[in-house]
Amino acid sequence: MSRHGELSFTGPATFFKAPLLDPGSGQGGHDVACLGVPYDFAVGYRPGARFAPAAVRAASGRLAWPEEGLYDLASDRRRLAGLGLVDLGDVDPLQLDAEATFARITAAARAARKTARLPVFVGGDHSISFPLLQAFDDEHDLHVVQFDAHLDFSDARNGTRLSNSSPFRRAFETSDGLTGRTVVGLRGMRADEEAVAASRELGHRLIRADEVHDSLAEVLARLPRGRRVYVSFDVDCLDPAELPGTSSPEPGGLSFRQLEVLLGAVIEHNELLGLDLTELAPGLDPSGRSELLAARVLAESLAAWWDTAGHR
Ligand code: MN
Ligand code: MN
Image (cartoon, rainbow, N blue to C red; front, side, top):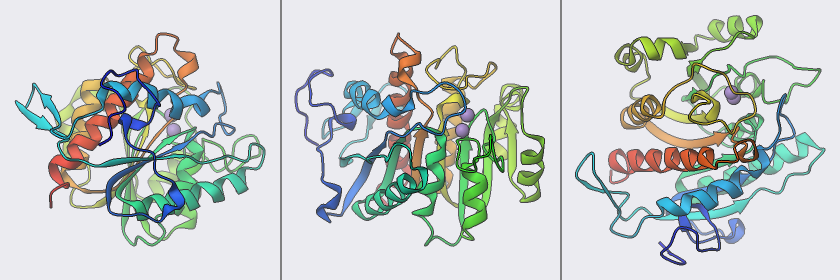
């Protein structure tokens, strides 16, 4: 990979200091392609996720890996060695036109899938997962694994059906290829009862944060295995004490360690086809640790993917 400069803060900032690639280049054959989706006009509460792609690019410089990978103390070996990543830049949102913006997001995600074996999308609020999943409409049996404090399965909110409360409702309505969903980290006092019932009706597996706290082992046993999966990582699945920079924080969330174990298991036991990270609002955390943690979760995900699927 291109390194720019050795120190983490030398620019220009790209995801993990990867080379920038024009998405229209038609070039393929990369391992991973990262695409920024700086759209947060669908949040129901505190905005700011539009700034997440830039913040994650800056923070991820700290985890840029050389060709020989990063030495991992826990496993006493190098991880990410040889993994080739490219940065596809950002989708350009049409600020007040959600449907036109979503069309651009879907088109960019389709191009990202052609560029690399694993496309990674950095939002943006969670509404973007609907147009992102539309780029996977050629898949016939795709399972969504969502880490989130919220279900995001409401039919409508404040008269709109394209908000960050509804992406998976829309996705499952419009795509026959989505055949299952597992949600981990649910909590809070203001869940949408109709959405919970509609999600259960479709057989979705809903796992609350307190169940993770009670028994990580039992939750691990309930995760999908042997499936083709799309992982949607809403950063508010984490406890706001660890990640305060998010639109709708809920107390009682997952720890980084719990997430690392759960995400690692999902990636190890399934075939990962795509991954998104949403709801990071860096301006709400002046300490900057939220984007550092988000970058770490991305790096851990890529390392887990490379460990298991990368060399098949
Ligand atoms: Mn969400
Ligand atoms: Mn959420």
